[in-house]
Length: 295
Image 1 (cartoon, rainbow, N blue to C red):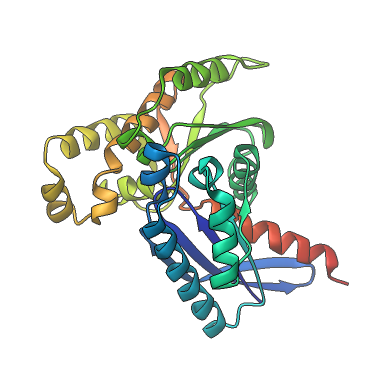
Image 2 (cartoon, rainbow, N blue to C red; image 1 turned 180 degrees about the vertical axis):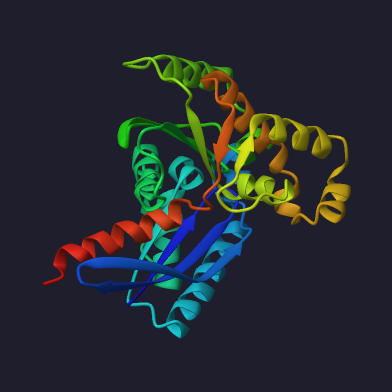
């Protein structure tokens, strides 16, 4: 059967459709379609505290289009989740009611902890070495989710208001970085040779720009070099020279800076980039629920 996840983020809205197959009690998930629309809700929320009428209209149009795409693919089950920008929007109730009335979708607003949990659920699908310790770093438009994994077990996770669109608009408050620093230093045991697992559209782009192949590591030195190259040119040059979308060309700079600062604070030298995210975690969660119902 086909499942769909709609992630209403601060920088864009994504529709991921995947097909779930079950055989002898095992679940296999294959990507069918991914659609991304750059409706930047965070640009409104992080400056005015509200989602504007124009962006509400864009959101509704996007959700209507997603409904038709899901219909064509014969999606049988879906989930719609909103994150940081919708969490903080003062008019979120009105936005949710408008989308339900005009596009027939019920939006679920995730807490930061729920978002971190769903992103972490992807860990078990990556077949990583459970002897290593990992730090999940998911940098979004409004927030960054961190999850510490030790020997295959989730030790702790938390969401912080350090996102790329937030950085470009309102800026990231110093208190947020103090909280991140304290969270990283407050470990129940000493962590050695910590490896980052980077998720989010920006780190996927960095991975591609560096010419990496699947399973290769992206080093902190490589991210620093890419950051220097990207900062050295203006927005138009980033768009044309590096073949970046306009809504990626601006946020990739603060994304680099967030990844780099967290890696430096945690003493991390290398990052795994598995190209997974919140939408994947949402579908995995739905698949697990279905698996429980299988005879």
